[in-house]
Image (cartoon, rainbow, N blue to C red; front, side, top):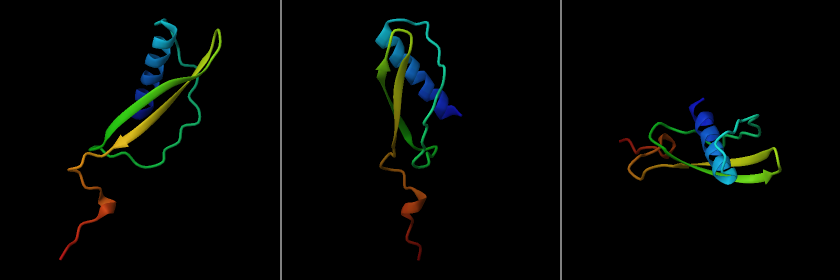
Length: 82
């Protein structure tokens, strides 16, 4: 839920900057794909770009990159236990 909210905020900010108009609404979010899990220690980078624009509508694509800080070890990397 939180990630979708952040993605929507990034899309609105991008669209507002593109149109120079603060009065925008989100009609729909579609084609949302999750490729890998996000953990509480991860840092997220959201990139939004206007992909399609017409007089009364536009589409904004939002990409979320997961950046794992170097000091955090993911569970799938495993630890050598003796």
